Amino acid sequence: MKSLSQLFESYTIVYRTIEKFYKQLSIEYARSQILGSNKYKSKYIANYLRPGREQQTGIVIRTVICYCAILCLLSGCSEKAYPVFQEQQSLGYSQSWERVESYPAKRGRNDDLYFFTPDRGYTINSNGHLYYTTDGGENWEEKLFREETFFRCLTFTDEATGFLGTIGPDDVFLSSADTVSMYETFDGGTTWEATEFNGPYPKGLCGLQTVSDKVIVGCGRVRGPSYFIRSEDGGKTWNSYDYNHLAGSLIAPYFYDEQHGILVGGTTTDKVECRSLVLETFDGGSTWDTIFISAQKGEYCWKVAFPTEQNGFISIQRNVKDGQVYVLQTKDGGKSWFANEYFDKYDYVQGIGFVNEKVGWMGGGNQWTMETRDGGETWQPMADIGRGFNKFQFFGDTMGYGVGYGIYKMKTLRPTLNGWEKDYSESGDLKSKIFYKNGFRSGLATYYHENGQMKSSGKMKKNLRKGKWKFYDKKGKLKEQLNYKNGIAKLPLGLLKEYVGSYEISTGVFRTISIKDGQLYSKHSKSNDTIAIYPISDVRFILSIDRKTSIEFVRNEDGLVDRHILKVERREASVAMKNGGD
Figure 1: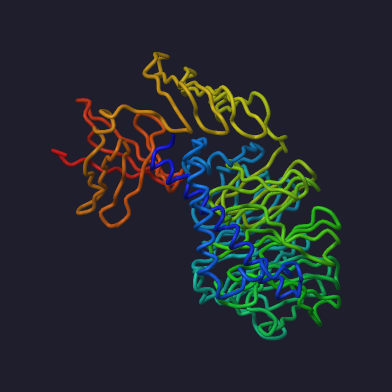
Figure 2 (figure 1 turned 120 degrees about the vertical axis):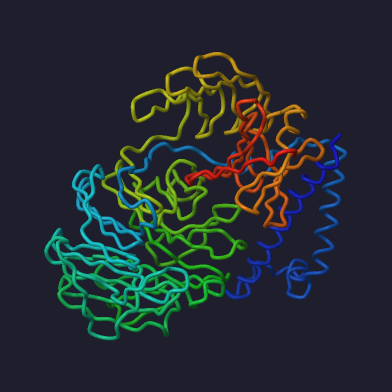
């Protein structure tokens, strides 16, 4: 029989599932009205989806939920992992990508790249840096720096001629004081000058594309104003056009040839009210047709990728955390587009790219990067590829780069992990030996100290620790054994009570650790929220709202808990000292 807390959790899961189902039906119904579809011709379905019937429909939903909850209680249905661990269970592991640690820009966003060969190429950074490498990222040379400039997009026609776009001034979210929207070089990046335009001067650019040795196109910007630019002589002269009557935001061009192409972006300058938008031209940009507008608000079309001539994708950046999460897809070379819903939770996506016709990635956020192995039909969140991708570039079917919150490199495309995998440090020392099943850590797992001694060992099931785990010190001596269930360590009540108290983060600012019914909670003095924390070892706990944030308790020389360390992935840890007497 389930406890009340377990019942509540099951109840919540059922509620969210049915609520999501109802919202999706509502979206589909609204779309059917816009498109004139008779998909919901039944008067019974349409009656409950019609605007104004929310209250009556809510009663039906709550009745179904209560019925399901009673069945769950009576049947003693199986327990589920807590939400923060459910997220971890959904993550696969690719191990095809690695971060380029030698990249000099440690802060800011890297929005674009242009490589001539696998070794020689450029990257740009939002803090005004343009970098060049000749050895595949081992070493970098700064070719241009402009203070208070947000470099946004980049393209070259050859190794001598290139163009560099900026976001421009006065954007609500992206800081840039530079009024020059595009710079140009004709000497291989040694000097850069402001580009002149025939026509209205674009305030900022988000995308550039070299279509041929003569034709180059570009557009911008996110949140407007909207402009299209085009050169027909290899960048010697440029024409610009005001497209504010066609779009509120323009983000990326994708031309199939010199005359036929699309522009993607959004309908308005307001990101919450904006609908995804695709424009198409067959005459080089003289005239345009609107070929797609999304039914739901709060999104932009962002980047375009065609792994084959017929199969293409447009990534969708969702600016609000509800609604359908999808990638726009075509299977007829862009003649028609449809929404391919690939995930059941919010996903922040910008960049999209394919290394071959089957394998590709979508990224933009910090939590994961989506990977497909079946040509974009299905997508799987992956944990170890990179962060914040905005652009990809590939060479052949085994090597490529991605840029975002760092520079990432794929040296080889590895298959979905199955069987034993060993991970080594840069010095060649064994770090871990783990058994994988269909990309998930499922089986025996062993981790090692830097000196080669075993650090911990136990079993995992779909990325979570289970059963008995053993932990060793650097001399190989057994320190302790812990039992795990759904990734959570079972700790004695006496140990948990030692962590209770008030910890000073800074002068007048505290974090209070409390306990209730054997569960620890964390509360910041400047917040009204009390957050459950779950043990993943005897001293380390993760927040119930974020698996990448942890609290680690530390003892002094006398063996008393006197401080804790808050750790956020890829950020500097912060220490809070425990007040005496607590």
